[in-house]
Amino acid sequence: MLPERKQRFFYCPKCSGKLEYRSDQELLRLTCLSCSNIFYENPVVGVAAIVMNEHQQILLGRRKGGKYLDLWCIPCGYLEYDEDIYDGVKREFKEETNLDIDVQRVFTVQSNFHDPNCHSVGIWFLAQICGGELEARDDLSDVKYFDLDNIPPLAFPTDYKVIDLLSSDYRAEPPINSSPA
Image (tube, rainbow, N blue to C red; front, side, top):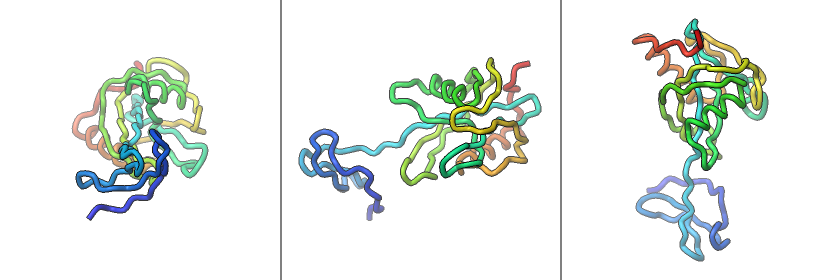
């Protein structure tokens, strides 16, 4: 039996016909009752940059609005439709922290199910600061470094998982310093 889904879209973008969930190869998919077009509800892509200072502390930002008010997160945002993931993480990090970064590598990829209205896939990158002055901007009210074993309340459950993975990696073998010398 297929799980029930809360319908978020009701009209076909192709012909304006009514959309309804139908079983397609054992998956529930929104299908147009008029033209049979399948409306794929794919996740959006989020990007985040993990930056550590010389004291092996992680840079976090405090959210300044909405349901995540005053909770902290790894600086992040959504990828634009035609944007490269590396350009996107640099743009988002600059928008939120005023810092320029060099992306070192992908650290982890996770599914985010914390918002029932938006399933996203997050890509967390390890990065180094290469310019700019630290300043909270965009949807952040504060930016600050924290010890990995003393993290404040986080906005997104997946950030806890990422920080746990990061802590495990640091215990095994600390990565290179991500702040400039």
